[in-house]
Length: 103
Image 1 (cartoon, rainbow, N blue to C red):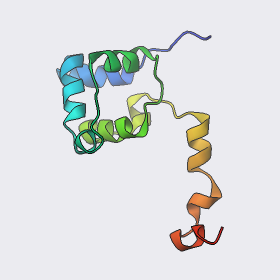
Image 2 (image 1 turned 90 degrees about the vertical axis):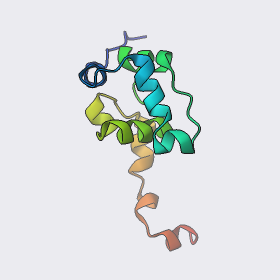
Image 3 (image 1 turned 180 degrees about the vertical axis):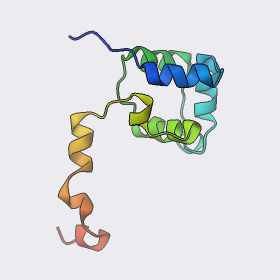
Image 4 (image 1 turned 45 degrees about the horizontal axis):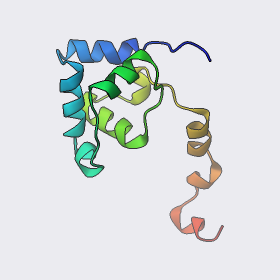
């Protein structure tokens, strides 16, 4: 198993915002998406993101991070998984909504 690459961009954002990991976690939970999805972000989750143990958080967390930081997850140092990219690029997603029902 390859060694995790630290997410320096995320850590730098947090430090420049003068937030502890616990404070950032609380702010993630208080975003619109955090409340909508009842997120349970904590200091440990922020640590796992920053150390690179988690390279692509689940979608509700990505939405909350975007709301909090005003940056896309990729700009914060996260790397989309192949499965996520494949799904997002699938031709079916590019069809108008009414055509999905015909497939």
